Length: 331
Image 1 (cartoon, rainbow, N blue to C red):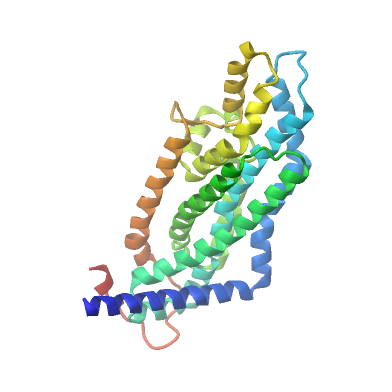
Image 2 (cartoon, rainbow, N blue to C red):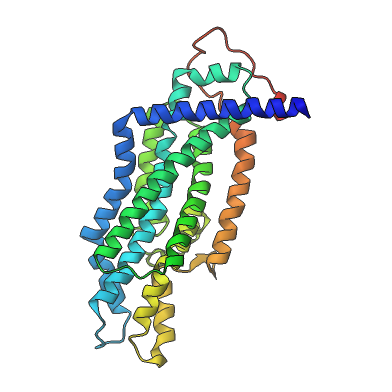
C-alpha cells in the first residue's frame, strides 16, 4: 500500500509538472492566447452584424400571415439561438488550437525525452488533456460571459438564474467531450503546419455541421444525419434548450391558443431545438447520454491508442538515444 501511494504521488507530481510547463508555454505566446479568444468572438460578431437579420426573417415567416409579432421578442429568440451556436463552436475550435503545444513538443522531439523517462505514457497523455481542458474551459467561460453581457445589454436576456448555471454546466460538459476528442485527433499529427491546416478546415466546416451558422433543418437529410453523429451538434442542441426555451415561450404566447402548438413545433424544428438522429427526433436527455458515451469511449481511446501515438515524431530525442518507453504503467 505504501508503494502504491508513493507511485501515485510520483504520477501526480509528474502530471502537475507537465501541465504547469504547458500552461507556461501557452501563456508565454501572447498572440496565441489572444487569437484563441478572438476566434469565437469573431464568429459572434459575424452573427450580430450579418446573420441576425436572416434568422429574424425566418422566425417572422413561421407566424400566421398578417400576424405582427414584437420585434423585441423575435430578436431575443434569435440572439439566444446565436449564443448557443457560438458556445458550441467555441468548445471545439479553442480546444483544437490548444493542442498546438503537444504537436510542438512532438515536432521538436521533446516528447520523446518524456517517453524515455520513467514517467508513464498515460500520465503524459493525461497531462496534455488536463492542460487543454483548463485552457479551453477558461477561454469558453470568458466567451460565455461576453455573450451574457451582450444579451443583457440588447434586451435579449430571457434565461432564469438556474438556466444561467445550467448553461455553464453544459459548457464544461461540452469542453470535456471536445477536449478528449481533439487531443486524440491532434496526436495523429507530427508538425504544427499540418495541424494548423487541419484546424483551418475544421473551423470553416464545424459551424455548418453543428447547426451553429445555419439551422440544420435547411440542409438535406443526409447532412443532418452526418451532423447528428458529431458530439458538438448535441452540445449545441442542449445549449439551445436552456438558452431559448424562455424566449420560445414568450413568442408562442403572442398567438391564439389554437395556434400555439403548431408554432412551437415549427420553431423547434426550424431552429434545431430537437435533433434528427437518423430519422428520429431526440430531446436533451438523449443528447446528454450520447455525449456521456462519447466521453467514456474517448477516455479509453486516449489511454490506449492515444498513448501509442505519442511516439509519432520527426525528431530524435534531444538527449541520448531513443529508448523504448517502460510499459509498467499500462499493465
